[in-house]
Picture 1: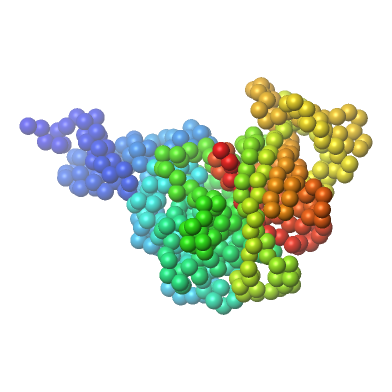
Picture 2 (picture 1 turned 135 degrees about the vertical axis):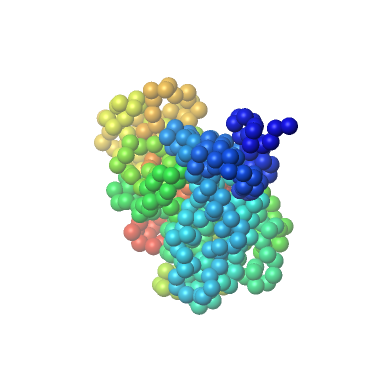
Length: 512
């Protein structure tokens, strides 16, 4: 009878592979005992000598379609995948042990190991942008990151320092770590997993209310929504992913905070009795996960870090076409005026927040041209940011499958094609216009807007039909492509764009 050390290499590797992948989640814990059986087996299966084995284990335990597609073939080498397996195993163990979720001493600084905390959060965030189900299982079932995030944000000693700062009448911090952690909160936490004690409920609702509604403190995007061409640059950071350094811009905190406010805080306040709120991604069946839903979010991190590079849209063309339903909130004008005048968190935390339902029916039109002539193609000039970047006097006329655009000074009309138009492989989208109509308790309104190409920010002007409801400007991101949610803020269109105006937040979900 053959001993293990006498098995052919191929057979031995199969034994090692199945031992390592017996459990779909967690590090390959059954592999070290096998390696310790004898020197011969260790030499044949060690991490140093057999990277192909560990690369196979990686693809069994983690999702790989998205990184292979987005980052190219250079990351598919056995050594790169083996190193990524080792890295993720290490960090998943740290998350499981609660490392970084809480601090030992309340202060104005994060955890005493800020570099390690940053690496944990970036890894988890990128894993969720690449998620087809396996990555989420690793973070939830093995690393228990759902509990980690609840501690991080809502525990009195949480590393976000949100609860501590709110108790001192200070605003929660908006920095790289907290921005990533807010997105992970939205990705991974399920409403029915939230603690229900009065202290916990107060911490959850206060933190999310402040970060979602205080538009003067937490910007919806960086650079400013009033800059269409993004001549100013966002702050990029270096991130090691699959053994290579990438320069990325972390997502802003506000879009995820708004979704979390509607999904978690309002759910708690309504005691789970409402069906009008957006569903958290973690509430949907695991088999529904598609990494393609987050391509635009990944591209946004890349584009903002290097705006001079050839443009790849941070938006999936056609995603806004259809009927959308959702909610918008508003506070008493005097309360918000006090906030803009330097009011402390209790001004917002203790105020009443009203909400209304609204429905939008949107149609999306594209300016098409060949890639070679894209820069030379005639396009609509940019107008006032408060009018969703449409120039004064512009006239939009919908035809059967196109949009005719005329503006003062133009020699001839520009034609935009409906998003359902079948583009050729040579055609690229040079500009996107969205128009539509809708209704809320305040009445009927018309909608028209443009998509900022570098980061996919949609600016949408909302004009009520008749009456004195006026015109409002909506700005936000579609998060999750076709099946995602549109999260953002509205503001009055009378205050100059460089002045903080009267604002509220909104979230819209596709109606099927």
